[in-house]
Structures are given as C-alpha cells and as structure tokens.
Length: 84
Image (cartoon, rainbow, N blue to C red; front, side):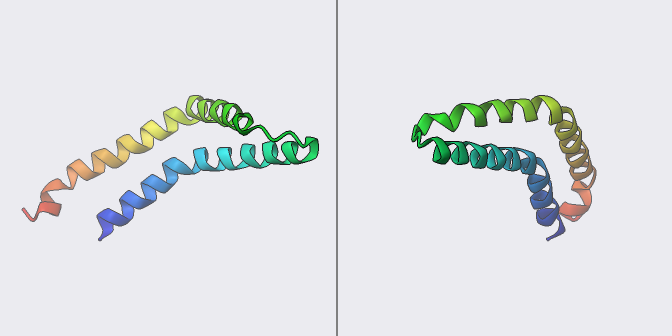
C-alpha cells in the first residue's frame, strides 16, 4: 500500500507544475476571449504549449532528479517488496 501511495504522490508532484501552468494560461486566455469576444478555439492551444515547454525547460532537471531518486529507492527496496 505504501508503494502505491508513494507512486501517486510522485505522479502528483511531477504533474502539478504542468497542470497549474496550463490552468493559469487557460484562465487568462479565456478572460481575454471573453473581453474581446474573440471565440477562436485554437487560441488556447499555442500559449499552453509554450507554457508547458517553458516549464519543462525550467523544471526538467528537478523533475528528472525526483524521478531518479524515486526509481533508485524502488529498486533498492525490490527485495523487501517481493518478500525476500
């Protein structure tokens, strides 16, 4: 049960920057669309794509180190998790 909990926490930790960035950009673009009455569907895609790329560039090293630490911990615990 703890392995599944740790996996969900790691997933949440790694997905949170992308989700928050996309949420903020989507909100700003939708406010802009509402104010200007410009209802273009593709207008939200490009800014979200740019924000996700920037987040990946800025936080990619941190995300990779977090995932590396988690993977190392899981591999080191393999014997005890299997029951050996």
